[in-house]
Image (cartoon, rainbow, N blue to C red):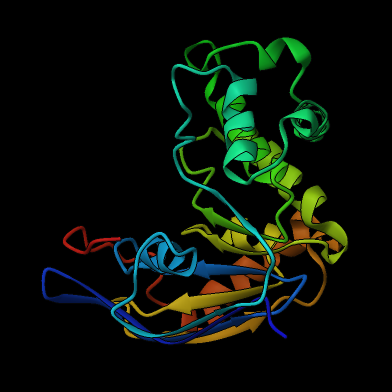
Length: 249
């Protein structure tokens, strides 16, 4: 059984179609990157798949047990400490109070948060630290599927790479499945098992390309060469850097 299966998914805002006829299947243990021009509906599709937005058409089959979600903005509760933000997700997931402290400590260690970091409020944290808390919040509920909605776009190059490494380490071994929304082919090449290209106007998935090896086995050189070859030779990726700011994502 697949981790996620979308069939004929469609959606409209105020009578205007933004997604139509979307078919996409993500296997268990697979990270699927979804790319496409800004405004083509990538984030909307992720929100529909995660049951945050109701689709107007189509069928969605979720074969995973529990999902987490990491947004472009950390979206932390400003009145709660880092620890409190992670604990909030555990409370919503129904994790007993007596188990939360150990779960928080374990997850914080995975994302390199120190005990003193957990006592800080969001205003006291850097952008990278806030995103680490957001990742910890998603991982703490022990999901077997994660939606990544362009989570590293606002970070500088060094921090973005560190966060990508964290995702690679976390997902290594096929323990997690996920949908990674990005407009950056280089990021997709580092993180994903396969890459899907969404039509410029959200009218279906134009095609899917596999990567020849697992993310943890790739080098910067092979990733760079793949991206350059793809942009130069594969017509599927011809319009992924187009921008239509009138579209809604």
